Length: 512
Image (cartoon, rainbow, N blue to C red; front, side):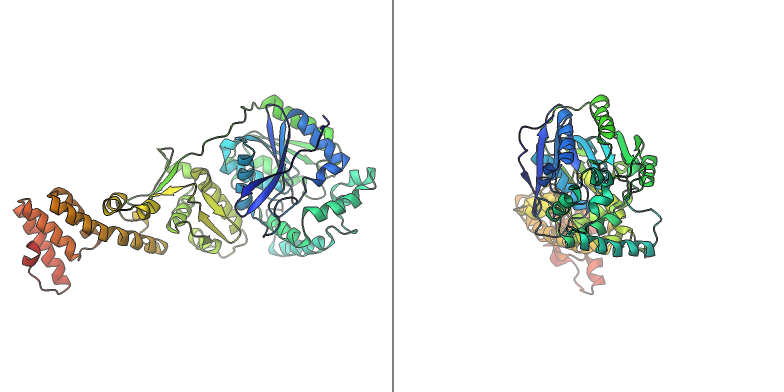
């Protein structure tokens, strides 16, 4: 279906950048395309082969494609985003376009990102169609020496990117290059508008470490995996490995050696794509959804509630995901370096080359529970306090002593008292509570609310058994309540505590 006019390029606000995207076509089914290494959505329409493919998509779906952060029409004034950041960039694009859920089309290097998004935000995915990709793009058993060779090759490859000797077009689209002698020169210009040479090196490096094999078995959506049997860039073995990991996947092996989807037999795989989307999956109308209310409790116990429903232990998927969430809460929205998280979650691991992929798995688990709520870049990870509320932050927002006391039901992460990273947050929370509790107890004492004073005094003594003010409040409240036996026990406890400190006070003064 030829389009009357080219679609408008829009920009979705993402953290620190704008992500360029276009939406076109119509129908009840929405397809969101996750891009390969680098592209340019504006220039894509120039070549007849690319345009024909896009117009075919528009004939049976509402189709969205976008340029990754740092590439194409998206903002290119910063560093390249890693896999964890890209997942939230995709969410930002879908939100900006008003797309609640869609069929995701992951192409080439976009495959791992698509799988990670589906594992992280399953409710936003109808199905997956993956073309020329895998859960990892390099052999799972690649050696360090082989990986070093790949990196050397990537630098040499990038040096030719966008030049008249660039091998990209002929290597990835040999059929189209043979059919259209002008295509290689056009694509060399296209490369210059897709990414810089330096950016390409970063993009390739990130693709080498992308590995979501551990998450693949958790993806229950229908998946169609399409791969050309003689693909020159990503061997069909990656697709076969992926299908073996996915519980609900079908593999379509198509003859040919082209890696680019729009080169070679396009109608063959497009027919299967359309049949898969329109014939086997029913999409609900696109609506703008409400973000759930997520709250994390850490004072007195650890719990997460989503719209008032507590998340069960089994929903976390792993102990590491829970521990990662706790660590991020302790940082109170400040970034925690990836190296620190590696040490926390895998303290015995000496080979860190694969830990980035493992951390992505755990981040996916946390994001799935929190419905987002995490900001990740290549150096660090932090909790997004705009999307998630914590009782720790509520404690610091409390505006008076009574509110502080009410906001502090117990110590910070009591099951993790021996973890060094909890010490600072625990001490700061207690330092916020103690003076407020003392002042509030004095007010309650003046009002004659003796039972409440006794309760607060006990809480203060539980924090610090040598807190003279807490002992004084307890003894005074018990005396005024006429609880002579309990008051005498409180005096004995006070004398014992002070004796340990060699204070030598007999406690009579405290009884006044």
